[in-house]
Image (cartoon, rainbow, N blue to C red; front, side, top):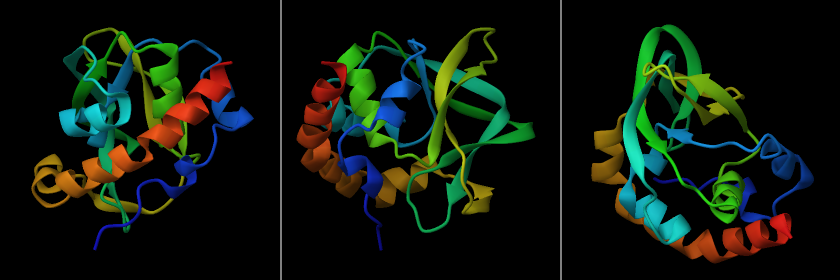
Length: 164
């Protein structure tokens, strides 16, 4: 069974979400579903430039009853992901609306010496095991990307309203 995609994200961009972008984030470190071209294409209509990246001291944790992960502090772990660059203001707003309020947007140091902004899981429901991207791709990606495509127009409208 697959749960709904970040149900809270379906509403308009709230002032609290808008404030998360007030620091003018630049590159976004992605470690879960946003690593997949199909998901990015469904949400943004394109796949932004990206490079492999990793964050030491963090892990992409499997979450209870969710197919997507949460980035949580883990001193002895390193999470592999991608660094998305050249995101427009509207694309940042879309991705921020997509990530629900259970995530905090924070800058994290990367093993390259650079830093990137990442959506950190700030709530409970963390499982002991790491999230498995291969399992997600095999079992959930197609349906997940299709759902992202269905909500993308609403997210884009909220993003445009937020940056006006």
